[in-house]
Length: 224
Image 1 (cartoon, helix red, strand yellow):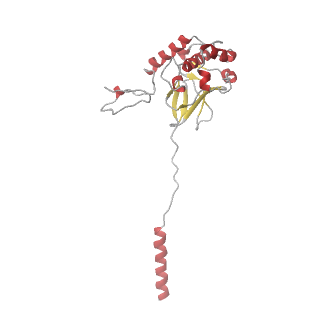
Image 2 (image 1 turned 120 degrees about the horizontal axis):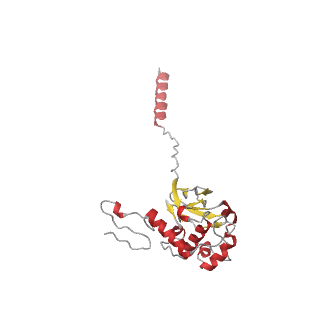
């Protein structure tokens, strides 16, 4: 009888102990989906890009690329790689050089280069880069020179560097397009298609209620 009671007691202890154990299950959350952005002077097809998640991408006919929030994007044409920029839904040469000034020398040189590489020479219908551009494009840097320095060169010095290979890049022009023409196209595109020179800002007129202390780094902002 005692043995039976002891066995029953031990069984109860084992049962209670088993019921009290914690169980763990590995739950893997799906990754955030890739977002789609567009690279513009007007939309640029055929420019390469990479990020921590995209090893080797190329923009499509609409200038679109895939990106993930919080990453940096590096755009390139062959061995010519632009400065990295934070990933966002719209990227233009303004973003590559962290400026809002379309007359910035680095921006202007980039605009002239992209428009000169356009295969049909008409950026108003989009800019398409030939595969040949990737085969020949290169930024030759002097000792101690950065890619930012390369793009910040004077009109004449930048032209001297890129026109060496520009004629073999498959674009409609073997020389850089006119400076004023390049800027005019870019500004007109942003204002006509995006409504602003600053496509990544928000329009306060579309919000209701109160907006508290909006700030934009490097500027003073006011809301009436």
